[in-house]
Length: 187
Image (cartoon, rainbow, N blue to C red; front, side, top):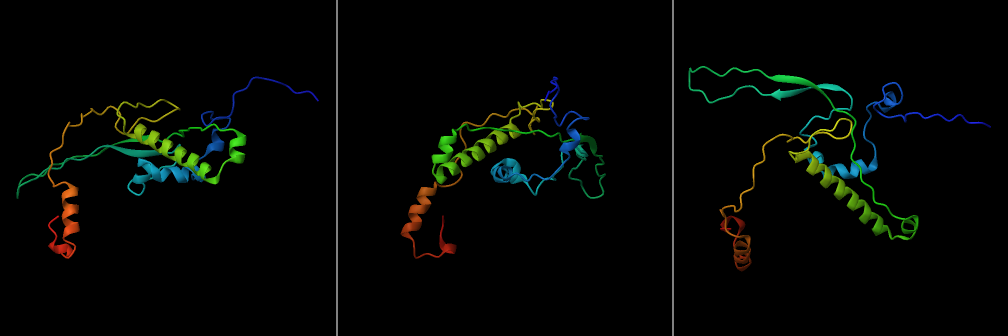
């Protein structure tokens, strides 16, 4: 039996005539994604933002209207909204932990859970940093820009003012005043 060999491009989600139609928007059913998402900032935003399927053009608001305090009978500010169309491309983040087959065969179940926890923690941390780091710019067909891309950096203050008593002084007083009711406690 003879085989013809020819160099060819692999099917990707970017080749419109080859494999892209096979990668139509579908629900994320992968078990690891379901485990990792709640650990990330994106997972914590779920319910506060709209889910958008991949490769679909949707309107995105780019500026808000005008609002101000006004006196009685005074003119009210008038504004308009600005929109643009955006498409969420199919992009992915990945990480691998390389272990031998022997390790997987001989490992304790708790070890597999430890490896899984590290993958979840590591991926969630990576995605969180990518989401909020204002230096992360979009790379076409590889990674999205952060939500703060191009925003100015504001350095953290060296010291915050102390506005409340330390917790230790309240908790030690509480232990001495076990007989007081909650409404009578001063801490």
